[in-house]
Length: 340
Ligand code: NDP
Image (cartoon, rainbow, N blue to C red):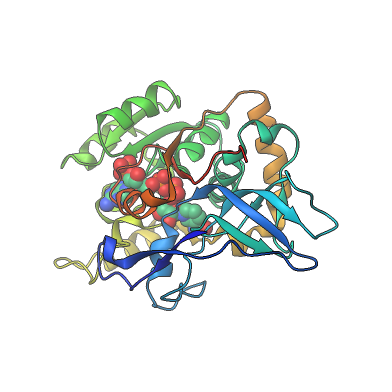
């Protein structure tokens, strides 16, 4: 069993030295236990937060322990009445080939989702759920309104924008680079997508949002947020989903303190700004999401792009790259094939 442990806590941008590969025997399931073989491993930006020991909504990863993560796995051996060898499940194996489970927290994959088992980590799993709830429950977009989506081609953003289009909104994405922007417009069907690498992002945004912005789905922060804020309409909504531009920061940025500007805008425009943590705020609504999303998938109304990288060996570099925008779509590590 190969596993990747957190060797040390990153300071700033993570490096290879923060990760260590180890080998162990494949564990044997006891009575009531299941042996799971990881097929797909989900890499997600929140993991950067758990590598630090700053207080947060979930405990940090322990140094020396296998890095935790959502996975899609196959039951290899079962001593549990509800599972049998060959079943596909969503589990929390973490960055390793095999893991034991007592069945708690497992989600069996059945029916149409088995056509794309890895989607249970994306479109039909944690990131799709995040897009769905953040946009619909906090953003509450109305037909004809303007919705701006950051990290627009990523796992969450691509789904936010497509749902907003389904709801009849004018959707502007913000993404890194011409290729991603073209994809957002031509494949995802956004009305436009702007490259955040250019200095005139604020100007361009103004041109593409002539009626201002009603909903800004925030995943990035930093200069993208600075460009959006002045264009927010009265009673606009900002679901604060993530702030990835700052995940590797070691100190607050120098220069102007933007807080008074932000608080002033909240006050004058009566903005609704709400942070949310999908697993903690919405777990009770997963079934509602899964039902609706499965229906949209069956009707082929959504496109979902994955960035699948083979082999656990590539997990650290792929993770580091994701925080720099090197991924194009939901990041999945294919740890093994589904053949025994
Ligand atoms: P993505 O697939 O969107 O990958 C991350 C993307 O972030 C990169 O591809 C890059 O896209 C963008 N990015 C990174 N750095 C910057 C930067 N400095 N400026 C602008 N864009 C940047 O990841 P996810 O869809 O999985 O996650 C998106 C966000 O949602 C993250 O902030 C994450 O933490 C958050 N999240 C929050 C949850 C919650 O419960 N609140 C649950 C799940 C995710 P590009 O090249 O286009 O800039």
